[in-house]
Length: 254
Image (tube, rainbow, N blue to C red; front, side, top):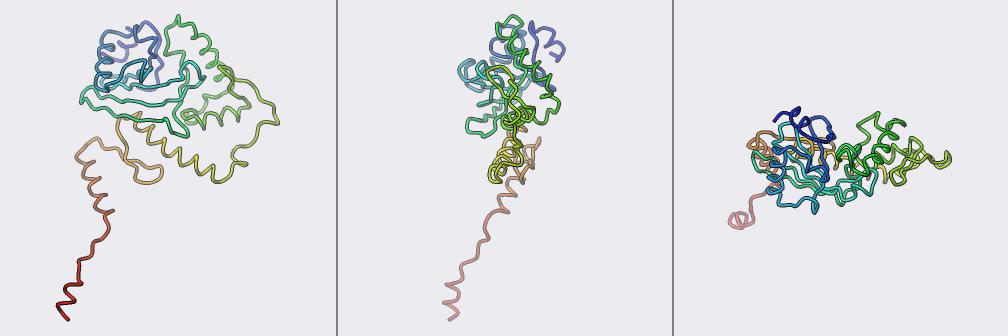
């Protein structure tokens, strides 16, 4: 089934980001039969139950890969944080699990109304929030909206705060330059967290576990034999040099 066929058969709009399409649990009953079958297969491979461990499904264009995403505060938070994910490759049967529960700045969700049926009672509320965010330019730079801390910083820079599902202006004297008055240790900690989350983002997008090689640099191998060779070589290079015992030889020479 092509991407166009998938969207045409769905009775409710999808949230689409690039080649990915997101649907909330409340819209699963509107999925085409083929997508429903693949979703059930993904659940079986991941050994989890909808509504219990995850509530959002992400399909790619080919539908051979499905991510099962857990946003426990989907309805409670305006921009809910991702707690855990299962990326399932239906062709190979491989499942990659990742937890964000202890993350300082987890990925967050926007435009969540598009994941819900058109007649959902809270869709209009969520849509109003999205329109308010668009009106003040929060989505102008997509590179700044993906993770919680950078998103909250951006909202504050715009002169707003999030209260429930509304963006409320804050007093001018409450707006401070977060880049100048933040202690160096805090900045360093957030930079470290962002580098860690970059690995999570790569894993989410490519459905492959990246290998960190230096701060902010990751390798991803399509050829798993090359990956194993690389890991083996790096392991050998990190082994401490072993010196041959020579005490016994010295004693014999004496």
